[in-house]
Image 1 (cartoon, rainbow, N blue to C red):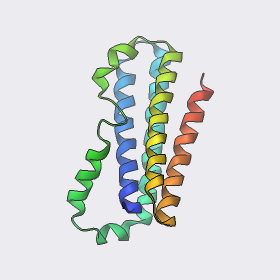
Image 2: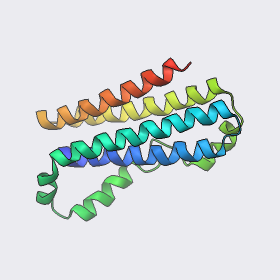
Image 3: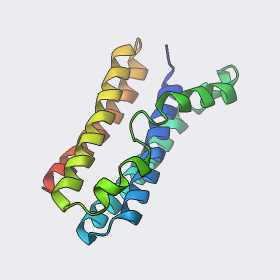
Length: 152
């Protein structure tokens, strides 16, 4: 089973990927309202990353106990890389000239995928401490989805 530290590291990796993803989309969009939505999402992902870094500090001692943390962190990164956020170039053309509703709908789909991933991780939890950490992550993602749906 994954430790709270490892799960939070996965969450942090996802948020960092999301920030870069939305940043690239905002830079490529030609429709200003769409650019603004992607910029907002980039900021939200940055805020989530800050939140997860704070949670990671709570489990800092645990990371010292993990064997081969450097190898483990590479493995954890590989678990999520390209699984939540597709390669930006694969969809940039599609969303570069889209309207605001399409951009928001697309972002909701991505965020719901992230939420599903975290709910899957929650199902793997065997201890309360880890479950609590994942539930905090899930709550952040739900808030993100609500924000996006409120933009419609």
